View 1 (cartoon, rainbow, N blue to C red):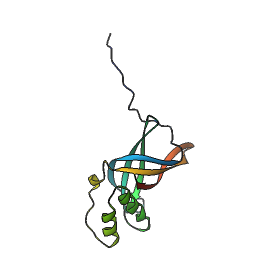
View 2: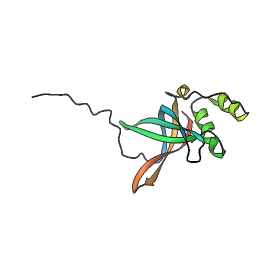
View 3: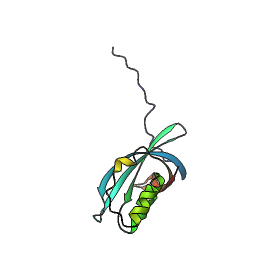
View 4: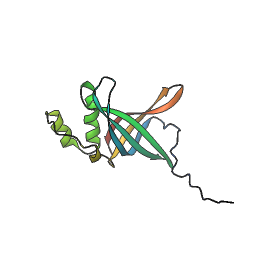
Amino acid sequence: MPILTPNLSEIETREPLEDGAYPGTVAQVDLGTSTKGNPQLIVDVKVVHNGKNYSLRTWVQTQGKAAFQFEQFLRACGLGAMADAYKKGDTSPFDTDSVVGANVLINVKQEMYNDEVRNKIASFAKA
C-alpha cells in the first residue's frame, strides 16, 4: 500500500480577515484592462496572520480619476520618487516586476459578495 507524507501547512485560508491593517508582500502584478477599457494592475498580496496564509487581490487603476490608487501603491512599495515623476507627466514605462516582493501595509475591509463575506484591499501604505 502506498504511503505518503502530506503537508497542508501552506494552504491559503478562505476565512476572511477582520477589518484592519496587515503587513503583506506583493506576490504578483499583472496587467489588465478595466471595464471602461483603461489599463490597470491586478495585484496579489500575500499575508500571514495568526499562522494562516491569506491571498488577497485588488485592481489598481493607472489612468484617470482613480489613478490615485496607483500613486498610493507606488508609495507603499517605496517608489515615491517614481510616483512624483508620473504626477509631473513622466511617461516612462512601468515594470510590474519592480514591485514584486515589496513589503506593504494593506488596509483590509470586509464586504459581502454573492452572500459571502470577503476581503477587499481598501488602501495601501508603506510597511
